[in-house]
Length: 392
Ligand SMILES: *Cc1c(COP(=O)(O)O)cnc(C)c1O
Image (tube, rainbow, N blue to C red; front, side):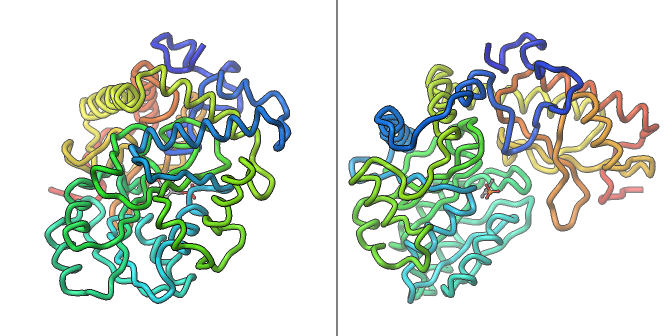
């Protein structure tokens, strides 16, 4: 039974009140029982069945991305950041320059990676609760011919804001630059048509909207770009060209693959397809968001973002200004009730976050909202106005 049916019993961990709460986080997140179950067996990395499974995962990811006939998918061990670092090292030429669009922690992390790699960079930065301006991006590119690549984050998980992908892509393409998109927390739930948008490189990972368990990430790029990347990476383990060539030749990873994670991911992809692919997943996450945000608003808790900018992935709420509100106590009390939420990550506002992705449904979201109401009562928190925007 999958964990996201409308029967609340199915949505709770088997062992209620156990050490395993539902994860209302942007990954690792709550996975279905079936996805966990298939990890009970050990798989050999050279097994023909395992090799066939890798081939099928790669093909399916290319379809979801609408990568077109030139597209190739490279799987890589590690978390999403490993694949971002691999992509930046392989696609930004050593004498190139990357313009990074920043409205949160993940854009900033890309700049740190470029610094480690010794690649020149510049930034277009706006506030964490604002979307970047495509016209400003176009102007910056027009004024700086040295920029070879643009790196942008689709859903900035710091706040959950969904950046205007189509307009930002159009700005980059109008200036003829290479485009690398961090679609880590959007891929599989928000539609992305790489070919139509002109996205050259897309990076995502197993444990976000495709609802797998952590252990690998993937990069989708055109064959020509991969050929150009030969010999460019500073790192053997992060060399996407080398990994790609080995996968093409042998169907296998070069080094020990996270076998259980890959088997679980194949199962998770089947569930994605059964749910109706990207459209089906988006519908469930959107319903999750609507229920959660609606219920917390009704309590008096204020979301950080306008509805138009807040995606269905993770919701950021202002912490209540009531002096009796204490995030640690709030977190622990929710955890005791079976829900693990996320602290805020904004630089200049006190917030908390609740993920609306994973194998969870509206029933769970209603449960979280009820638990929050209950916990705030217990804490004696009555003034729910935002902590950082005092109006009195
Ligand atoms: C999760 C995430 C990453 C990668 O984070 P890891 O912890 O390395 O998996 C990168 N970018 C975005 C937008 C993310 O949400």
